[in-house]
Image: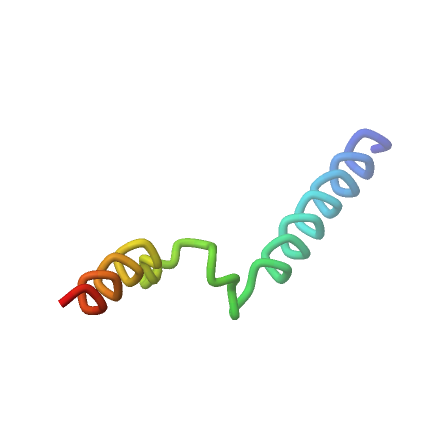
Length: 54
């Protein structure tokens, strides 16, 4: 009986920890986490230099 209670407590703590972790990763996420709309500043600088030259 004691092993059953300990097992339930461990399972409950695991479920609690997973749920807490899931809540911390909810939206809105950081822009750096998987963002694909990154501005290429080197390209912008290169284009600005070409425009200034001509």
